Amino acid sequence: MEQGKVNDAIPANEVHSVSFWCPTIDICILMKEASPKLPPAQRGYPRAFTHKYTTILYEKISQKFPNSKLNSIVGLMSERNVKECISYIHKYTKSAFVPELTYVSLKISSARDEVELGHSVEVFFLFLPSEELATANLYVRYSGEFLTSRLSEFILNNWTHIEAQNGIAACADLLSFVTANREIKTRIAQMISYPYKNIVSSDDVYLFPSGMASIYHTLRAVQDTALSTRKLDAHTSKAVIFGFPFVDTREVMNRFGPGFEFFPFGTDKDLTSLIVYLESHHQSTLLLHCEVPANPLLTTPNLAILRQLANKYNIPLCLDDTIGTFLNIDALSYGDIVMSSLTKLFNGSCDAMAGSIVLNPGSRFYKVFKHFFNTPNQFAPLWLGDALVLDKNSRDFAQRNQIVNSNAQFVADLLKSNIHVKRLHYPSADEESKYFYDKIKKPNGGYGCLLSIIFKETIDAGKFYEALQVAKGPSLGTNFTLAIPFAIIGHNQELEYVSQFGVEKELIRISVGMESQDDLRELFTSALNAAVIKNNIT
Image (cartoon, rainbow, N blue to C red):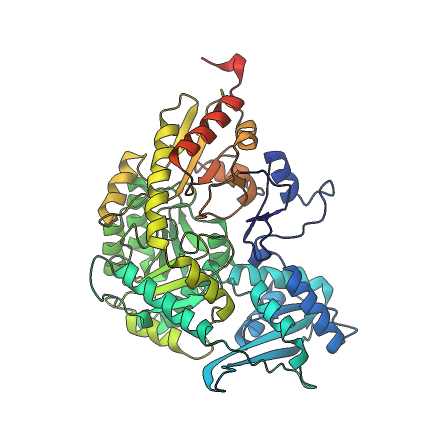
């Protein structure tokens, strides 16, 4: 792949790109330090960076509703979001500002027959002091409910419909957009139910603006129902995170709950510790959270024992199958709730964000969780423009999944046999983890697209990363191979802390794509050869 410049879009020239170029480790470090040596960032990961279309929209809102005192704006997707964001700002800044609010109401109907489609979207614009903007943006980042670039674009394109009051009435031929939402839910229900039949209906699938939003709302659902189902105080009860998770998952549990108890390795030894912990703390344990497998260490825990513990102590088991995917593994037979980031391999094209929650109809919590998610205005819906793209891109998900399974296993075998590789993280590479992964692997399932490597001292990891002629940036599950120095990008403020769990500074995470295996062999062999430290070969 032609190498891009720092902060170029991935994919190239895609205005709604999810990823962006981080071409060298040194540049990654400068980016995380917000170094003035780099030009101002033009893009970033969508829920953590304000897109240019959203910035333009904020400017138009400011001009239409000028406010001299509250001179910053954040877009939110519901009145609930507004209240939560204000509370979040008050909690973390001790600010007592009185916010002002305006909103845009999108009424979606069919231009052909003027039939209401029963879908409306309200976007709320919270005016706040500039010094509170960074905190408000953190709320958006970790709740995952953000104003997407496609929704901002849609509002801008319909700007002439704005009324004298606080609203836009936008009418367009969007019947196909509404249909896309239904198609996605049906597709997920069918895939997650396989090889069984009709285990999950599309009504058990809920769609969100991002994968992080699915994690956030899982926490909210458990908190909301804890008192009625378990006589539990959700304000003081901690979550349990079993296995090393994506960094923002930890932030969700800390920022929107009272924290978590951490069992970072997800091994049988950790399981023994968890059993001891729950014996004395089950009455104050809110939920059990686990990634299957974990990101970036790709370990898989003993889900059968976790399920037994969840049953014994009446604790919801919440599983994130983003890395495993609901085509490769059967998380639903174990979890009360299964969360996924649809941004990743389900979409594949790296041009749209989304997340999903699937409720297990066999769960003892099914009815209360169902009631929670069916309550009006409980969560921000997936914007129809993003759903249209996601529907189109996910139609060949099953075929792409088979290809990347095969390719990632090929690359894993290639690297595992290399004398310069100190440690390879891949679900089939570790004997204990493979055993538990195989227990939940579906017929025709594979081990996924993601792997991580740590080199011996004979390889310069920075040179390997720079020499590897693939896309380089955040995210995973792309149709093309995508690499990132994971610890530096995800844990730059806590490198020493995470290294004790195996997430070393030199770790390179690779999401293997759909290139030919001959090309992959050439790409990785060339990068390894270029990175060998000649005088250190033993």
